[in-house]
Each structure stands twice: as structure tokens, then as C-alpha cells.
Amino acid sequence: MKIIALSLLFHCAIETTGVKRFQASSERDGVLEVDKENWDERIGSAEIALVVFSAPWCRHCQNLAPEYAAAAGMVPEIKFCHVDATEETAELIARYQVRGYPHIKLFRHGNFSQDYEGPYTALAIANWIRRKSAPAVHLLKNWTNARIFFHVDDDDQENENIVRAIAVCENDTELKTWISMLEAVAKYVDDESIQLAVTLDPKLAGEEEYGLFLYSPYLVDDDTNRVLFNPKQTNDDSTKVDTIVRALEAATAPAITIYDAYTSATIFKRGPAIHSALFCDPSEDENTIAAFEIAAMQRRDRARHVIIPSSEQRVLEHFDIDPNAELPTLLLIDLRGKRANNTRDTRTYRYEPRRFGPISESKNILAFEDALLFADETNITLTPFLRSEPHDIRYPNPQNFRDFSRQGQVLILTGLTFESIVQISRSNRKDNTDFLVSFHAPWCSHSKALSAHLETIAEHFKAIDSLIIASLDATKNEVLLPGKGLAIQGFPTLVFFPADLRKDHLVYTGERDYTSIIAFIQKHATNALLVSANGEIDTSSTRAATVKQQQRTTPPPDL
Image 1: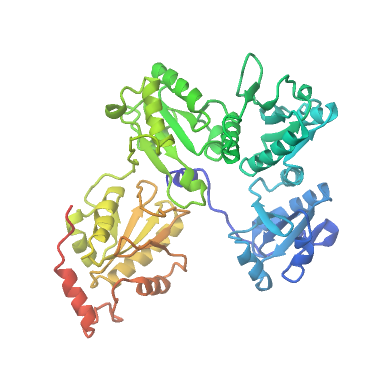
Image 2: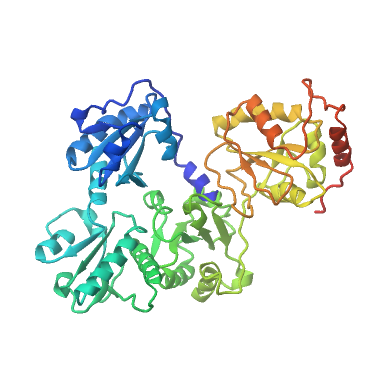
């Protein structure tokens, strides 16, 4: 949730207005129209095909159309196709999980390969598809191949930042083995700044030995950019692949990245999925920075190390760090869950000097990092740090939150009271209370619109003790859930938490109107919610009356 909220500080929602249709659908533009009738013929038979899914009402699709057609003209050997989102193509839209428009997808032999996530310009799209259609592993047979691979005749400064890995092989058998292994590596390092190759001639790689060599502007050995990397330390090919992937990702950036407006755009998207972030004043914390640099050199293949200067006030505020009293401080940001299809929240861990010792010593920083990096091998358990607003008169105490709800008001939660009210109530098997919680942002117009509906719903159900309507500012508070966790994709996110803690929560995906939300609540409520049209509880139901009486006499959870 933390990184999603941070990224929302710099990005706005995409508008989808307009009435024109995607205009690049003419065969003369090199863009083939595809529907469910000719899908197998045009996509299934193609070795590689690029497909854009557009909607007739989407203005961004209109802007993309000429760029997409121009890209098709630049790469005529690749099939560029277009699917118009209509009732006739609804099956295709659902099959390939198209969530928004425009949406560009790459297919190989009719099978989905990956999404295009780059700029919507002709040159960017053309360059991307050229890379994807080229072999994942280049075979360097002669000097001509080598000059092209190393861009010897290319003056483009961007090539200076490319990381290259070349396997120098002794024989054909080893060549085939390395090709297979590097092809497996390529599936995990889908990055235009990483290129892979094999050769039987050490001279083409500028080497005199056999093995795998990394060429990176960030890895320096004896005044060159060549670092010998020998993965023969293990006989397990899968381990070799994992080791190579980590080495390549570490080589795409310096040991330490300074956070600024330029690096913030990519810092969370590339490299290791665990970030070690040092918040400090560079003019005063020189000893700590020196210790951090030592730790970074030793753990660069497992964690991205970032220095966030005290001048980055918005970032410090986001992580609840007081620049006047809490610098320097170190956070570990675990993005592994977020990168695995947002299956759980991002976890953040704060350095504890009382536990690990002075932060100005590299051995203490390494001990803290290793507690997460090698969690299965250490006996140290880290507790995630969660942001929470301070308590004030707006927030009920955990002991009287039911009285607050009985007044027909939306219960305002913080990160701390979410745990002490929602989770503890759900862990009490004698407590049959369900919670409907809106995770919102105060600046979001959609959140404000939903808030009005929730107030009406809270008033409607105020006679029902088995249901609490609540709201939490997700830009200032965080929650930690067991199991599959909770990934906030955008604001507002409405989540139903059933009374039984053992049951998974449900994210509401329906229309954000009063009637639809009421129906959702009644469908999933643990207890029957029998309310008359005027909002009074239906006492004619013996079960409802019994449930109500039981809940009235249920003591508050032991806090």
C-alpha cells in the first residue's frame, strides 16, 4: 500500500472521454482488424503479433491511433493488429484480461506473452517490438556481430548504460548449455538495458578466459567495466539462473542511488525487490553514509540501496519521519508481494538502534538487512512498521466504537484502531460483527462521492449491531492483514471484512451507488440484516431479534 500511495502523489487518473473510434484500423495503415472470428487466423498463426485493444469512447485511444499506425510502418515484418471493444469482442476482452484502454499486448504463436508498458509513441513502440522479435540471446560469430552487439559504431549515449552479459564457451556443448540458461534468464530480466550473448571466441568478448562476463558502467574492476562472474559454484541450473538474474539486476544501477526527481520515476520498478533506504542529512551524517556504502557493496545483488536526502520533505512525510528528530534512519521496503501481482501489501521495516546498535556501523546495517534478506537463516524477526494518524476527538476509543456506530455515523479508523477494533473484533469468535471499510484519499473526488453514500448506509443500518460502516484515510494510515493481504489499487477501495477472521476479506467491485452497495452487504453479511424501508430493524424476525439481543450483551473485546 505504501508504494502505491506514494506513486499516486505523482500520477493522476486517466480520463476516458470522447466519442470517435480508433482510426488506424484500415488495412492500408498496416494495422489488421481482429475479432473472434478471425483471431486464430491472424494471431494464432503469427510467430509474433502486437495487438492493441481500444474502446470507441476513449480519447487516449484516438491519440494512440496514428502513432500505432506509424509504428506498424516502421516494422512491417511484424503483425500489428487492432481489437475494437464491442459486444462482439467481449469474449476476447475477458479472455485476455483487458482492464483499461488502450491496452497493447504481445502474442507469440497465438499465446499471450506480455503487456506493453512504454510510452505511446511510434518510435517507442517500434523499438520495443524490434527488441522483442530479436533473439533473446545473441550469437557472436565474428567481429561484425561483436561490433553490433557492443554498439561500437553507435554514438548514442544511452548505450553507455547498457549492461551486457557474454558467456565465453569452450565447445559447442557448452555453447548450447549457456544459450538455454541465458534464455531462461531473459524471461526474468525483461529490460531493454540488459543484453545477453554467447561466443566461442574469447577475443570477441575482449577476454582470455572462459565463463560469463558482465559489462556494466557500475561494476568496475581494475579500471575496466569487465567483471568475471562464474556461476559454476553450484550444479543446480535453477540456482544458476537465479544467481545470474540477481547479478544482472544489481549491475543495472550503482551500488547506491540518490533519490531525486529523475531517479524517482524508475527506482521502484527495476532491480532487486527489496530496498534499503537511508534517510539522512548528507552534510551531517557522513559516518552513517560511509557505513551504508560498505553495506551496499556487500548486498547490492540482493537489495537496492537508496539515499533519501532530508531535502525530500514529501518523501519523509510519507514515511512519517521527523527530519528534526529522527535522522539518520533506515527503512527496509519489501516490494516482493507487490511485484507478485499485488498479492499483498508492501511491507516496511524501520531500523531499531536499541536492537541492532549504532546505525553508523556497517555491521549493524548488515545485520538489519540480513534479518529480511536471509529470514530463513536468521533467528531475527522484524515487525513491519505501519503509519497511523494520531488519535483525536474524531476517532472513537476501541471500547465505545459500537455506540459511535449506533448513532448512524461512519466509524473513522486509523492504522492503529483498525487493528484494535476490526481485527480484534473479528478474532473474537463470540463477536458476529462484520465491517465494511472504505480506504479513501481525501483529495479524491470519487472518494468524496462514495462517502456520501456510506453516511446514508450507516444511518440505514444503525439499528443493526452486527454491521459497522467505517472509513480509513489510506494516504496517512496503513493496515497489515494476514494471508493474501490487501493491495489498494486505487481510491476509493471498498472492502468487506466478515466477522470470522479466518475468512478472507472481499473487495467490492460493483457500482458505487447506494442500492448496489446495500445489496452487496446483505449478500455477504454473516447475520441476516432485516431492515424495513424506514430503517427500523424488523423485530418480526425471531432470528434478527435474537441476534440483536446477543450482540447488545456481547462485551467489548479485551484490548
